[in-house]
Image 1 (cartoon, rainbow, N blue to C red):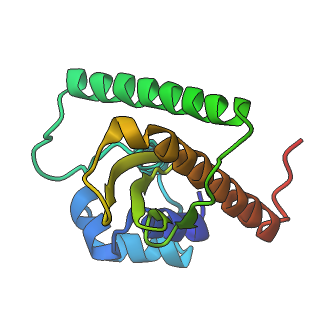
Image 2 (cartoon, one colour):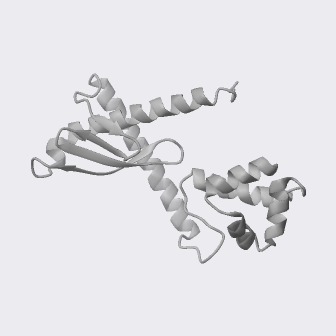
Image 3 (cartoon, rainbow, N blue to C red):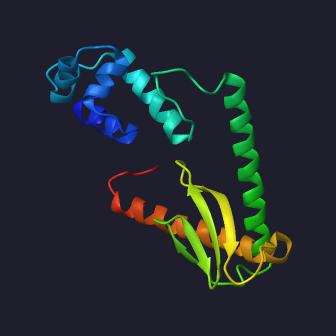
Length: 181
């Protein structure tokens, strides 16, 4: 890890130099010397930041300060639920594609985390791994009936996944210097 990497890690984790100094229980000037490149970053600190960033990418809430709200069994249960949800969402997408794709052209706004179709909407969370998790749906023209609207909601899921896929391709194209072999 170099001075640029530590700056990237801090930006990704959303922490300031003062916060990092407080969290690592070290002097602020030490962090500043790491960032300026005057002092090498200790391997243990690199590993801590890498582990924290990994937890962030996996969508697991964690900070080294304060009391932890999730036990290890809670974390395992969250992983299992996340995995099951991903499997179920993949099955829905396969089912919609098997019937010829979405019948309805949902408009997806990634910034608002919302897909709309006339008087219906589906909101979602974008996960750190680039996937999504459906949040809720609603209608402004009729009472909510999930059974009646099931196929339309499934169409929304496919449209959301496609839009996220397009965004991912744009990001890869913009970062063309990263080559996967």
